[in-house]
Amino acid sequence: GSFQNRDVRLTWVGRSRRNGVDCAVIDYSAFFNPLRIDAGGLRIAGLSHYWGQIWVSTSTRMVEYATIREVVYGELKLPGQEAAQPMHVFRESVLEPAAPR
Image 1 (cartoon, rainbow, N blue to C red):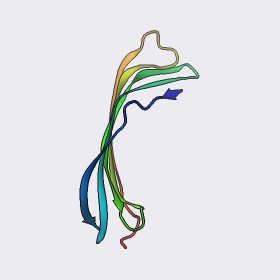
Image 2 (cartoon, one colour):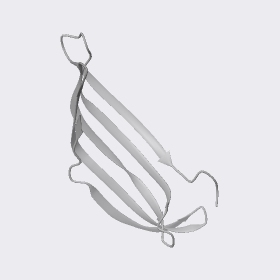
Image 3 (spheres, helix red, strand yellow):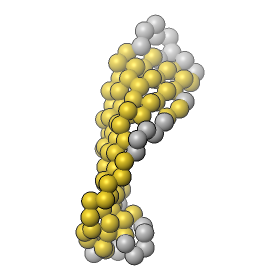
């Protein structure tokens, strides 16, 4: 399979505190990223759009918090199927430290 990031944009939002830590806050986004998988009769062809925010400690440069939202749409063909079917997936995730500091 293949996935190609296109036009990834980072935008400095500012500074804030999270978990008592001074952080740089950065928005990111990438749209119209081609996705193709061809494995064992399974075929997917489509596009991925994703965006989110990253909070980075200004002292340690460690990620204190991050989000991602992604929409993938395209066509999915399963083994044994004659025609591809539309596919639409949305996911949302949050990254945080495992234990409070």
